[in-house]
Image (tube, rainbow, N blue to C red; front, side, top):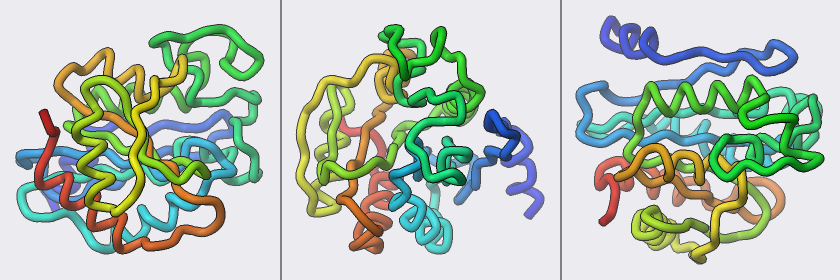
Length: 214
């Protein structure tokens, strides 16, 4: 318990626009060979990933791995049942890499507290792999150096895979640019409630054991 408390103390805690706490859950050990970050929800109307991360927390991390879980980055959007945060910003268009001004990108790169928190968390965790759950396109998607790891994840989950260029200002684009040698990709779940939850948990835990694919 003391080790877990020390791990948690080193990771940042953030807050949404409306003050909801953004706090990671740490599974495993900080002496791990591989670290994985899992974000259950970034768009408040795409909440099936929350069921998966709850099951993941219950299952825990495999030996010699660390899995950091952030259930929801867009806590306000989840609370209000809306895709964007309360500033009407799409958090997955507000990261600095490739940012372009639009009606949903925010007034400037990294303008939203939730976006800035995600960046701080990734910088603190330095995950080998980051997995972002979305809906409803029913595909694992990645680009660039993250493709091999994303393909492996799709294989483990028995799920379709597609190589798709990252959207401007997206979380995955930012991590791939700023942390070479890591992988960050998106899992688009089907519409509706989560299904095959144990399969997703198995895929995450196996990727935590295997790390980044070259």
